[in-house]
Every structure is written in C-alpha cells, then in structure tokens.
Image 1 (cartoon, rainbow, N blue to C red):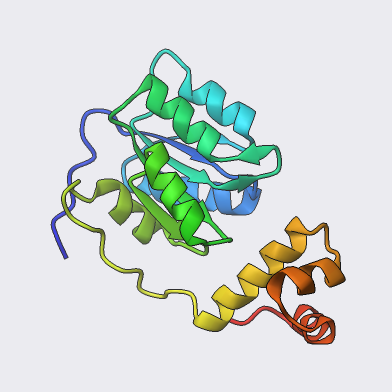
Image 2: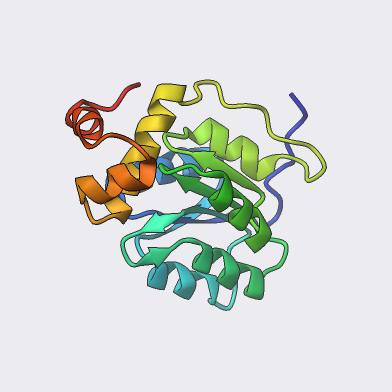
Length: 183
C-alpha cells in the first residue's frame, strides 16, 4: 500500500449524505482522524457549503440524494476550489455514474457500504497512485440485487416495466424483489 499524503494545513471536510445515521457516524470517524467536518443532508446545503468564502479541501458526497444528483455538489466544489479532493459514495454503483463522477472532478468512487478507512485512503492517496482495493467489497449477488433495485426505483416501482427493461420474466423479478438483499 502506498504511503498516504498528510491531511495538510486545511483539514476541512464536507460530508453530503441524506442518511443521517451514516452521515453522523462517518463525521465522528473522520473527526477522529484529524478532519474538521461540515455536514450537509441535501444538494442545496452541499452547494451552499461549497460556495462559502473558504470552501472545503476535502468532500465525501453521496451520488443519489433526495433532492438531486451529488454531481451538482462536485461541480460547485470544482468551481470554487479546483484542488479539493472529492470522493463519491453510492449504493447504486454503475460504470456510467463512476465515469461521470470522475469527469466531474471526483478523485474516487466508492460503493456503499464504504467504511471510514476506505474513504480516508481515497481522500489521502497520492494523485498518481490508485487507492488500495476495499477490504470487504460487495459480492456479485449484492451488486446484481442493487442494480435490480435501482432500475425498479427508476421505473417508479412498476414490476412489468422493470422486467421489460431488464429483459427478465416478470415472475422471476417478483421473486427477486420479495427476497432480502444478499450480503
């Protein structure tokens, strides 16, 4: 594992996530690692924090928030502070959204549930190196389940439309949706 960069003179960290329990738990963990944390639970709060007179040096932004897309916060941060190190978190990992996050200016893209160690490694990794792989990555079954759930939500929870878009039999989809999420 490559050596991590020091936090530096500006330890300010913005956490934008609409899951209050996760947001507060991550804030406590990152404060214990030396960051000065600011919390936001919506796109509007995140953009307001990014446009302050001293925008944060680091940010952890959930991709999918109730009031919009976390990439809007990433773009606002890039406009106010080009050197900010931003990590995107999402429970709905997809290659297209990962590419969009990196193009918008994120240094890394992590799937939830990501722990504080993974997030710190991504924030403090030298630019020219890749952060180490996560200790406990999601299983292939979990990734499939997450994708099905995402498409189901995007189809306004319409089983027939979701099955059509996934090229799957409707009854098969209903059985998958009735089960608990895999680990």
